[in-house]
Image (cartoon, rainbow, N blue to C red; front, side, top):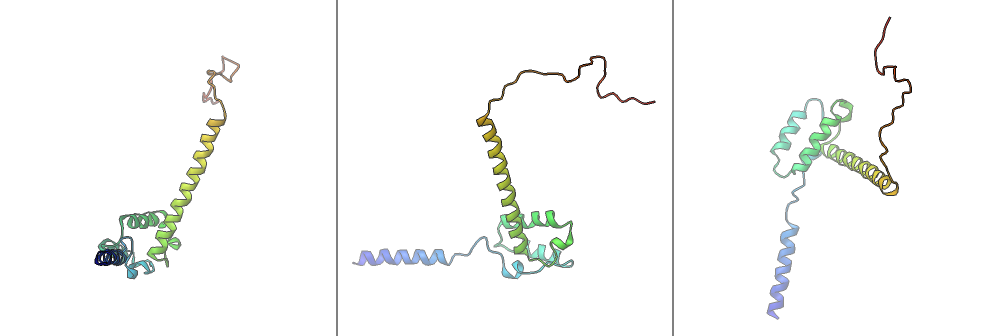
Amino acid sequence: MMNTFYKLLFVFALLFATACEQNKDAINPKIANKKITIHNLQEIAEQITNDANISQENMELFINSLTRLGGDKDSIIDKTVVQLIKEQKQFLRDRTAEVVQNSCSRISLFLNHKFEYIGISFNDTNQNQKINEITGN
């Protein structure tokens, strides 16, 4: 009976410890919900670099989002850090989905068809005519 009690106690302690563990991917809400303006971008960058809880992946997503969208200030102004990170994740997911579709189409083409090399065939019939020669008056 006591052995079962200790097993249950151990399971509850383990559950409690894992439930209370901080989310390593979490961003400080003060930073995450801060709207980007023309004047506070350096301040946000400093806060992000000083936040020990933000993951490298989220930092890279934020950087890539700024790099991709930063040329047009309307793309980043009045958006939050979390919004930019989510937009970049969606952008990367969409690009990856396109690559999957293109790769599968290409592989399907090769699997369903036979390609045979028959040599080089010249399209020009007049052997005296020079191709790609610049002439002028």
